[in-house]
Image (cartoon, each protein chain N blue to C red):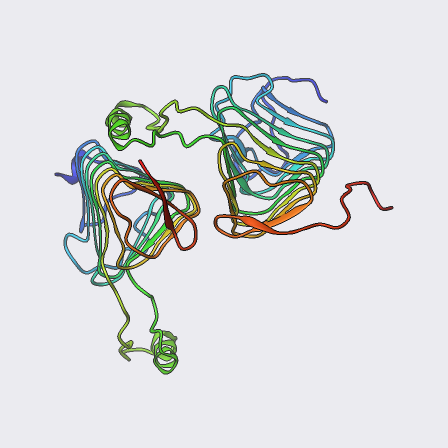
Amino acid sequence: MTDESAVSTARLPHNVRAGPGTVITGGAPFHRLNSLRDPAVVIGANCTMDRVHFALGPEGVVEIGDYCCFTSAILLCEQNIRIGNYVVIGWNTTIADTDFHPLEPAQRIADAIASSPLGTNRPRPHIEKLPVIIEDDVWIGPNTAILKGVVIGAGAFIEPGSLVAHDVPPRTRVIGNPARVVGTV
Amino acid sequence: MSEISGPRTIPGDWHDGTIPANVAIDDTAYIESTFSFVEFRSEMVPGVTMGRGASAYFGTMFDVGSQGRVTLGEYALVHGARIICDSTIEIHDYALISWNVLLMDNYRVPRDPDARRHLLERVPVLSDRRLDGNTEPAPIVIGRNAWVGFDVCVLPGVSVGEGSIVGARSVVIEDVPPFTVVAGNPARVIRTLQHQTSDRHD
């Protein structure tokens, strides 16, 4: 995998790898790539990343296999988002591996202060993060949300507009909020 | 209806584009930007029809395939929907489509993972890298005076009846009867509207 082989409208940041035949389009796909990891984003070969936003925190690592097609997806990653081969993600879909903020109210006040302009050098409280794993051949429809800790089994079909908060068994079709199994593929 | 003519621009448009020749717009209809047509590929004549007083505001995208036809009736208002159309999508008179709505008449991928894999292997050799598996579309109808709330998804084959309301963020997977309120994901009937008429009260 070499950076040079990737056709892109954006210059790839130093910690992004993209395989041969991969195309990355869009105005600022790595505008919010704040990961200190190297590599932070690894994209396989022959992928089409059309207006995808890679928003990664300091520890975030996103791994994407070969022959994936994403359209206007938003990947919010504080830990690890791992996506297999032949995965399709539709327009306006969000994948997040974090809760973003603590659930406990007092902790959330501490987080608000630490995150504010006055919070310089103040550490943020612990925030739950769990990797998101999307296996091979998964189709994720438009307007969908995939939440932290979810494993989507190989070949699954996520209907448009679904909110996936729990694991999805392989080769099942899910729909709804929260997404429930309605059939197989 | 104005004559179908050559490339037309929109005064003050932020996007440097034109309205395609096979888009038939009434002189009183309104389109905010030609950006709405960057994914328009219809070869039908007309591929998009906009009736008297119809309007398509910012964020509306006509992602219309070669055989697709979209019609907006009189006074129909689309305030930023993604319209994915390979057969027909009819938005009838006075219908109201809110922001970030998805109307799709085609999944454009086979449901079978193995078939999808073959399709994905062909994408890198396509100049536009468009994922289109030539799957069977199923037309969508948004009935007269229906109201579709924001962030709603309307899936292939669905008809929303006259005067009905689809609550915000609903996902509509089956037909909505006339004068009915549905909501939820997937959407279900909440109640029936009492005044079952779309006649005007002036």
